[in-house]
Each structure stands twice: as structure tokens, then as C-alpha cells.
Amino acid sequence: MERLSSACAAGSGWARTRGPDNERGDIVLSWLTKLAVIFGLAGIALFDGISVGVTHSSVADQGAYAAREASETWSATKDLQKAFLTASTVAAERDALNIVDPKSFRVDADGTIHLKISRTATTLVLYRIGPLKDLAWVQQDAAARSV
Image (tube, rainbow, N blue to C red; front, top):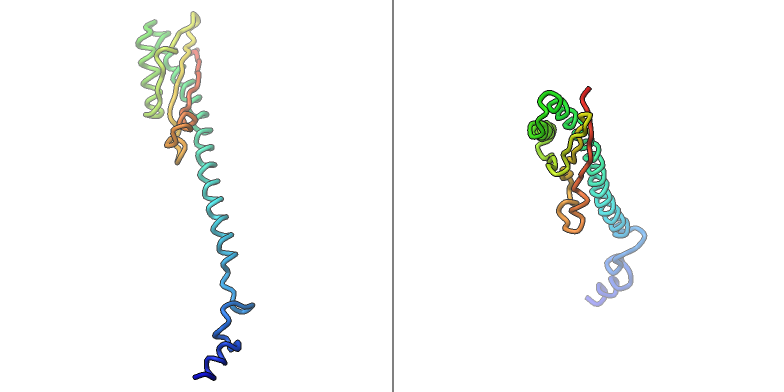
């Protein structure tokens, strides 16, 4: 029995746990894990940023369309309430989450409609974080006149 334990202790392979032929790749695995986490977080931040940018663009376009339709209603009826209802309806048809601010709604003498339209951008994380929640809220001024 003494010979067996002395042979193991002498380096027969049982006593060695690491060596050039026995690497497990722990360092590579930890770097890959770190990179995966970093790329994942960067991807979420990029998605949220692009989502807010696209929402800004679409809200501005939808606001201009709603203002033009409201201007057509104003030209036909000269009724401010009907023009506002047209703008709200058209904005909601484009996206159900669009909100037209009634306080900002006004009509110029030439029939140009001015309004503010807003919506919360669809994000993965941004709208869930209290201090950053305001960054997901998109509000655009719009103005248009029918011809």
C-alpha cells in the first residue's frame, strides 16, 4: 500500500490536477460570459434608443396628418370642437396610444391647425425605470393646413 501512495505522490498523473494537456478553459469561458452580458445590455440599450427615435419620427408624421385632417374639417364646418375630434380620431386610428393635447389645439386665421401629439415609446426597459421613464415619453408639435 505504501508503494501505491508513493507512486501517486511522485507524479503518476493522479496527483497532478492541471497541466498543459489538462486545461479546462475557465479563463475563456469567463471572458465569453462577460462579453455576452455586455453585448446583451448594449443590445437592450440600442433597441430602446432606436425605439424612442422611431417613435419621435412616427408621432411627428401622425401629428401632421391629424392636423391636416382637422384643418379640412375646420374649412368645411368652422367648428373648433369638430376639428379637435377629427384630429383626435385620426391620431387614434394611426396608433391607439396617441394623445392629442386639447390645451395646445388652436387654429390660425388661414386655417392652419397647431397641436401637440404624444405617446409612450415601446421599450424593453426604459419605461420601467422611474427616473428614465420620461425619456420614453414622446411629444411632438404638429401644424398643417388643408389646401
